[in-house]
Image 1 (cartoon, rainbow, N blue to C red):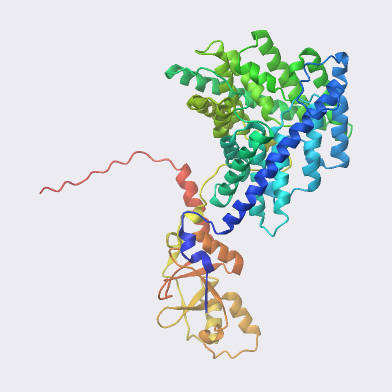
Image 2 (cartoon, helix red, strand yellow):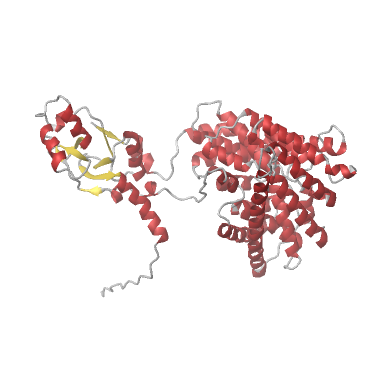
Length: 594
């Protein structure tokens, strides 16, 4: 007669994690997705190389090429415009989803699109990004590969009967695998998945993502190359002053991240006011890119050579200032125009340039402080402090600098969260009317057990009460909308509600029958006192019953009742604990003499 909370009230629900055997299935699928993400990264890099050779050197080649080493002259003003016109046409007549950073679009698909990406996006995103970067766009490959790898994972997941959460796991697994293949940073890719993409930390998603990253990392030496991307022999200073310097530089980088984010969206607002279709915006933005390339060709493209130069401290002060100012301008205008490209590589250059400048006044090698700048700017702009710190260490292979990277990342993160309501990634989503909350916490309903919220010893109705007496009771005496019906031993028989009484009044039934007889066919949900409160919340939603009886596990005797209002107390209790401030409490302990 009692319908318990199914498996939700049993032992597995009381464990530390919610996981089942499907995690192993997802783990096996992640091996395929990880390989797909690595292949997607290799294809993207070859496409960028092909576009660079075509636009700047007039040759059909997949070999790596540097667009700064060209002799095109004033054509530098035209080539970015041509590439941007092509990207605009692809976005308008192909898919609008290829516009933008790549990471915000992936987040939006995860949270609001049931993790479904189309084959069209999987094809057009790397092609459009390759054209954008190859024609001089000041972007990196990380945003496009996150979208491309995510599309590979999503498409593979859509071939099977999976839930939205399972599709999300494989989408993020593909994104993290792609990032690992590009940069060779498996730890940072895993943390990026946790801090930015997954919006959870559960075994069901963590294990498959890690496996996909490891598979991609195993493929990387064969497809792209092994070792750190920006291997360096930097000397790491020791002592208290470098730690203090890293925190101080982090605070400065947090300000830089804030200014860059605000400037980006001011520029984007300016493009929205243009009286032309958005398809043409990238072409207008690329005019600034061309002018910037005329001033300093090193601001064009991903600029990985700039990162090498910053870490090697091979740029003079004047060149550093020029790189910082011109790169920031062309990147902000190009990205604000809505073209296809990433944010990570430009942020590394801008943070590294500021760190290298500050490094001339801090102890140690300026190249080392450029690395701290890279960790801090990524942390402050993307709100991913641990990702930023590990990313800088993995890129350079200088893991002994990790404490200082963390110091710089946390300093930037602290300033960023205090000065900016949203990150450079989530601001774009918020402007589409969708708010994202990035703080992780345990659900209050999963934290508190039923016994902590229920109303003990509730009013009940006897099972031998007649239907007629029950109708009179609900008309004249009832204080609640429903009451548990119990037998002589207090065991639950069912639940009689005010709506039942109204139904009995209009139906032609035997009013001398007892409630036990009238409710004999009813299937009544119930929960146990040691069940998580979230189980009862699910029961209320599934059954439509607003008050759930709580019974002893063995005797099935009614000992309490839990209502919707009681469940709201759980959230209030946790929120009060976070905001209520109290003074110190001193307790006097009694001593017992022996």
